[in-house]
Length: 208
Image: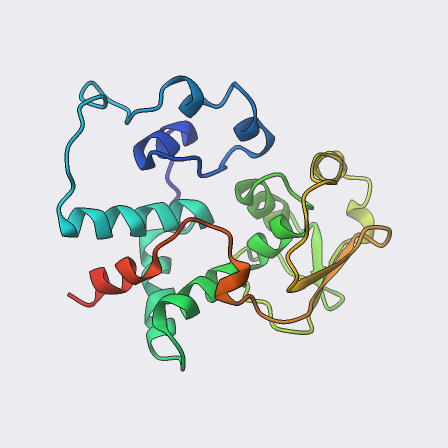
């Protein structure tokens, strides 16, 4: 699957806010948006008013960046959400939150979603006792995600757990720090998602 290969800090600057793509670095003074709070490029400091379409497009691009999802896959999630009972925008966010890489990040086993994606790809986690190395794997209520026995001494995971020790785990998840595992109590509701996303703009964009 194709990946956006531009400098991650440029994505945050383009959106005008932190997307937290670089884990703990995003919380330090080294984060570039703290030093250059304007869009990248030679015209980045010029303020221009976005059209309705531009506003909707930026919201979609921002949401894709938050979850590290490509255009084709994002559209697939939207189509799935539109065919599911409930508000399309909220179901879309629920699907994105249900990705295995996002759950690994939410449980604190990784410092960023991109790091979680890498760890999943490298086979660091089991789902219900079976190895799953597909970051886009959709978890369900009742699923148990655990660090595989042979990966429990992984330095990246240990560091992430230490860095994220004070970060609260969402109420839709349960974490067992000693066993390095977590359980999906229920699927995430809109009230559980703390990202600054206006999903109705995405629905409006795709409904044109």
